Length: 98
Image (cartoon, rainbow, N blue to C red; front, side, top):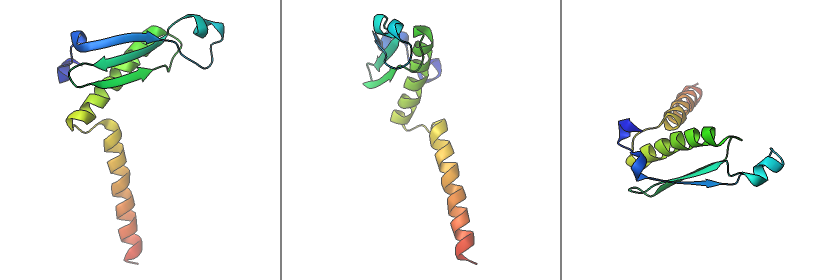
């Protein structure tokens, strides 16, 4: 987060209830995390894990990825997609020339 100039003071954090596996415990506690980066308006919701601390970590990671997309910086996911596209193009060019 520091690398991209994202400060904790710029984040709005709320804790929400999750759904899914976990039984009564999930119905009683707010383990999900909602984050909003106020300057950009980018929002993220993470209800992946049963523990609030892990969800806070993953939500911040997801927020950084979304902000990178917002800023036009290629993310890891976008790089993987581009790599697959290049392989497909190369494969189609080779099969067309045969």
